[in-house]
Length: 409
Ligand SMILES: *Cc1c(COP(=O)(O)O)cnc(C)c1O
Image 1 (cartoon, protein in one colour):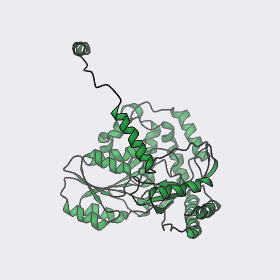
Image 2: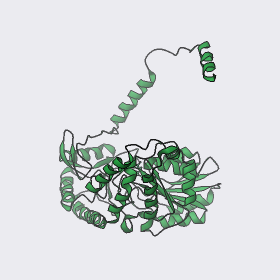
Image 3: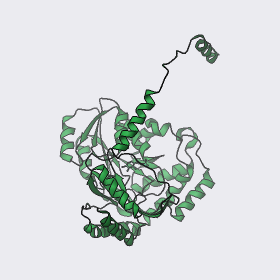
Image 4: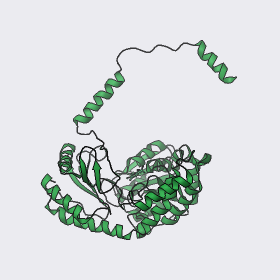
């Protein structure tokens, strides 16, 4: 009845005609695309003909040595993990059918959350389809509106930045890793609620935040602390339990986000925190509430991924060995490689065009590194990023060093 009335109302009115002619909208998009390309900012996707790994088959190019992937432990193509996914799909289906709050929370999701919470040492955990979605939910549900303030490291990941924007809280950016600046801003900014957000391992620099220092400030200013451990989960800390475990930190004020698509070899993510915060996310995290829950096969494979991570000390030792080999072997390069403890190794070049030329020269020799340009990194700090994986062997790094030298790194 009501629907019928509405249609009749609409039938009685006229849809006004818009202006005809060429689309200014599409012309503006075309112009933007040209300007983007002219600044050497256009990204191009490669098609891979093989599974993720240190050696990949690239369409039109052949077999290449890759330092591109975030598959730090070499688990993405691991046969045991592949089998866990296959068996998970056979047991629980291809899709979950609904969001978790409707009917998409299967036993395999519940078990994955229990195991993840136990693994990182928090009372509870919550699965998300991606880390991006997890960060949006965490930041935008914990602070809301102008009376709240979120304190964000200048080099935080885009998903944290977008979470800040979505929250409509006041955003205060502090200088990268600068706890004095952060403390000054905390002291100077009145707020109903305060949230501090930081990457644990910064994805374009590979450096680790001072997590104990951040937690001390969170305690001093009655803030909660969100730590994005996308690059530390599986890699850092005892048995790969992450950057917070490496620092020996536990607190009700801590909210950890870990991704399963990097060190975990799968896809998806989780938030680990107190039962109170997890319950808050279940109720108010919009990307949790309004999105179909993760594929059951992925949830079912989490426990196998954790077993592989726990048993993967050799993988973490291999990463340290590769990093050492890179430090030594890259001394023949004209640009320095930063010291560090993570598998992310940046080589800062400066301008975007020079960076992309170097990456292209390496690619001609079938060695692939990421050229990272603005807006991903600040202007003038374009860089090559080397991602190491436990799937690499020292000879792979030696090949990178010699090809890099010939290419003029
Ligand atoms: C990759 C990444 C994310 C996003 O995780 P996805 O699961 O890939 O969406 C979030 N934060 C950081 C620091 C990352 O590097």
